Amino acid sequence: MTAAGTRKPRVRALTIYLLKEFVSEAEDSIEPAEEVRGFDLDVGGVAAKFFLNPSRVALPAWFSFFEGKVDVAQHLVKSASSAAVLVFPVAGRWFAVTFGYGRNMLRQGVWEANFGLKVTLNAIDDRSIRSIDRKSFDAIARHTREEASRAGSIEQFGLSVEEDLLRAVVGTPEDTSLGRRLAGMDALTTNIAVRLADLPRQIEGYLHEWGRRRYQARYPWIDHVAEIRDRGQARELDERLVRRMAADDLENIWLAVPVPVEWAQVGGFRFSESARAETDDDIDIRRFLESVRDRSNLSPETLRRRYVYCVDPDESFELHKWSIYQCVYAEIRDGDDVFLLTGGHWYRVAPSFVQRVDGDVGALQATACELPSYRHRSEEDYNQAVADRDQTVALMDRKNIRYGGGASQIEFCDLVVGPRTFLHVKRYGGSSVLSHLFAQGLVSATLFLQDPDFRRQVRSKLDPSFQGAIPDTQPDARDYEIGFAIVSRVPGSLVLPFFSKVNLRNAVRTLKGLGYRVTLTKIETVQDN
Image (cartoon, rainbow, N blue to C red; front, side):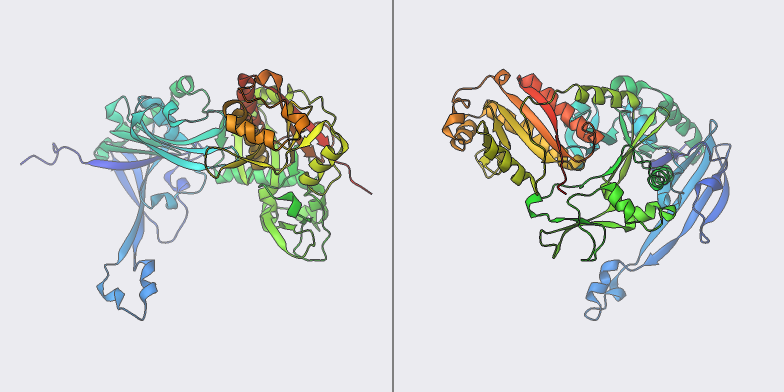
């Protein structure tokens, strides 16, 4: 029989957090609770602390569904939830290894964001990736996990390096002493054969990998955008936001409808459920602040508790309801960091990335077409009015084109001008609203070049005087302009949410690569007295 001291260690799944530098002792990392017990341990010569939350034994939640019909409890094995955390220092930094539901025992915001992701990206063979988690900033704003049937490179997952935020990666490390497989997000998860006494030395290897900058050479776009998942930092940014709002310092802070809406069905917006509340034709941050009785008491909770109500034209029923916090777009600069609030989430964006995006979008010219000011109830009314006043303009709004041989439909554009300028018109909204506009422009322009049936359908919906510009054979994109026109009531030049600018920038690159001219125009809003 093999002696216990020489027995091969078992393979264990470890979940490891690197704690922030303010942690100076183990207790700093644990959420206080009466039932938690702490034990001093020696782990390979390192003084460690083991925190244990006693198991809670209970029947599964579903058993009550059969209560009174079957004596389920008599025949069930009760389930137990366990939670524990081992905390110890390595090379001047503190680490927490969690077991069971141990993560719930850690204080919020006590761990380093993206520790596991950076370790994994630095350590793995870049052709060994098995799955990724990503968050997109396109028109749909998806959270997705993609798993490959066999290992491959990150490019094989179709990741858009500017429109997708990489949240987690699973892959095989080049150095097998780091584990059979690494999975990284905030925590690092690894399957490895290790004894308790060897844990500090093992974790020292992960700390070394975290400190490398290899990932920046392989994946230089990783640090462009990072979601703030540290609740403490997010709360601090929330507090800075409301202080600026209370002081009427509203530069780069505004409200926008967070999702696409059918504007023809919208009567207006108000900041109260009361039918007697005043209704506005759009949501405006100054109007919201006017509805706050005491700005000195404005808080992040106020923004989450208060709502904007979207009502029908008769103002008789509610179409949509969003928290004010969901509708806020804000940019806060702190030294070299740029923080963005959009869709209810904070992000840190590298200033160099911001400058590149701003420069490319700012270089876009406005369309040469003369577009009147907006004083209409809906986009549809505006487009109709523009077409009615000018015979060189054809209305294509709501004239959907089928494509792909199925039920898929898309608007070719809203207005055809000249007849070789295809304009897409949209009232200003949040990132998802405008990203949807840019995606539609890209898809329709691509189909126009590539799909003869699509062009025939477009031609069939145009007056004869415009049909000559839509050929049967593949057109030359250099003869055409794709224009995006945004209705905005904000004075001055057109200001877009940052992630909308990212989507626009990528759409413009593709459109120009196809040969099109691309323009971006602000349509001024005029309020009738």
